[in-house]
Amino acid sequence: MNLLSIDDLTPENIKNLLYIAREALFSSSRLRHKILATAFFEPSTRTKLSFHSAMIHLGGNVIDLPDSSSLKKGESEEDTIRTLSQYADCLVIRHPRDVKGLAKYSSVPVINAGDGSNEHPTQALLDLHTMAMMDKEVLKIMFTGDLYHSRTINSLVKAITKCCNAEFIFTNEINEDLKQYPHLMIDESEIPNYIDKVNVLYMTRPQVERHTDKLVTSNFILTNELVNKMAKDAIIMHPLPRTKELPPEIDTNHRAKYFDQVKNGLYMRMAILGWLI
Image (cartoon, rainbow, N blue to C red):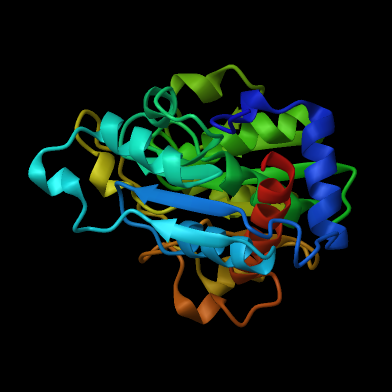
């Protein structure tokens, strides 16, 4: 089985992964003698290192496709994936376009670590884990930033609708995948009028590396004044990395949960690896 999209998971799969991550039901020898291979054709900090850390916590080992690989000699990406799958029990792949296409060349399970503007299922699961800790009957989520190119939001909205009651507010242009879900669309200038009505503010950065066919601009910058209008138990999330949209002075506010997301990424990816391998 691969994990290439949230569509690969049933609601029961998602709830089980959330339970395992929340209760920390891990064994330090669960994946002893197992090997994870990571192949990142795009930069990454949190996703790549959290998978490495998760595998080590579970007693396994990690090999990583180096910058000095035979891709430099002209080897195809397909042959690279074929090769890596001979050395490992699972592959984690990030690609600027399509992980699904490369997964066909692997003889072991493949996890999508983000492919262009398409999906990022493990980020969505760790985000859902972070939201689930709020224990809200209905999630009221405002999404801000470059929503058109956000693979994280594409996966997250799918995951939420599989197992939660939620209301979505989008503050910028969205892609066709998101339009199928019920939502309220507002202009960024209206954010102050709605920010006290949501329990999750989910922010994203401008995806400038994907602005080839469509430029989506966002002028929204979160301020302490706006944060103080939010409900006391509301949270601020961001998949990181951040740019100017989320100033460091927000970090000390009790609503800031984006570094909790980072930690939850370790627990969720431990749950995913233990389940998939």
